[in-house]
Picture 1 (cartoon, rainbow, N blue to C red):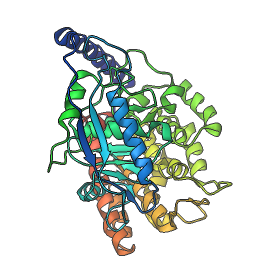
Picture 2 (picture 1 turned 90 degrees about the horizontal axis):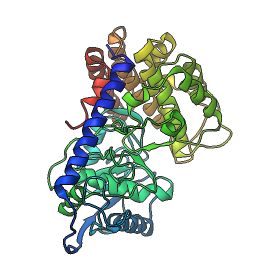
Picture 3 (picture 1 turned 135 degrees about the vertical axis):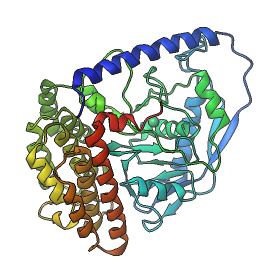
Length: 434
Ligand SMILES: [Zn+2]
């Protein structure tokens, strides 16, 4: 059974107090007094991109230069060396070799499952540019990056240029064992991506300088709630680019009145903000959102869609799963069950096209995967045999897709069991470090 919202938000407040307490204690212990500037450390990263993404050597270099500059800068002036003090960190991130290209046969461009993640991680290369990240220790409709913690591999989507340095530096930080910095909203290791999030404290700098261990590929960190003492309004919440995905427990702490705000924002919302709006509406569990979600997914678009706009639509079944988890909405559950069969997603049901070379079969697979994961996250008892039927349907696909979807359906079935036993908030919480 999911916990009532009041208990969840109470736990968040308690964690916030504990973390702020430990942050100020650390600043007392570390104290002031900068030693003389250490010599720079260079980490060389091999960069590869999926065949349906774009990235030039020059652009990769620019991102790495900006990331190195953010690490090196002392943005807040000389401070006390504590947890909230930005330190100048002499670390250079550099490109190793030309940006390589990997094919769909080598590793998937859309990360849909644990198996996809493993395949991508094992592919030689460090920075891996993909089309979409739909799994980061668990299913998500809103992630834009994900990295082994620790290990020498991370996956990223291309983003508006101003924030890419932060994404690369952030995932590299996870590779060096760093967790999230929820206390400092201006930290590179903060969960949201924004141009001003450039700070590293003394402990984080030590980790950046040490670098990432060889030969280990730790599981990535899942989405994580902010521990800020000041709650953020729902409009700001959905405008945040949550790197590993919008945090479920925080989303579900919003109310019916917030859902009304989100439904009003929807018609004018930017790509990606749309995904965040649907995920939050799902977490709130407001039934009015079901028609809005299905309508958005199945109505035609006036132009061919960008990768983010396609993602706004293909992530909706996961948001419907969050919604059905809270209120068992029969329309949502029916759609998720039917949608696990790729053949359900006919061009009539999805009357839009992507301009990044997605073919119908790959969109159908993505929709079927999102439906299976959505049904798993819903955690309801009834559809146990629906997963069996979905596995049968998956076996009729073209060979590569067939094996992949069978694995996805099996993972989704396991998720359903875990969510029905412990609740959805606990499911995501279990995928974070302790
Ligand atoms: Zn992160």
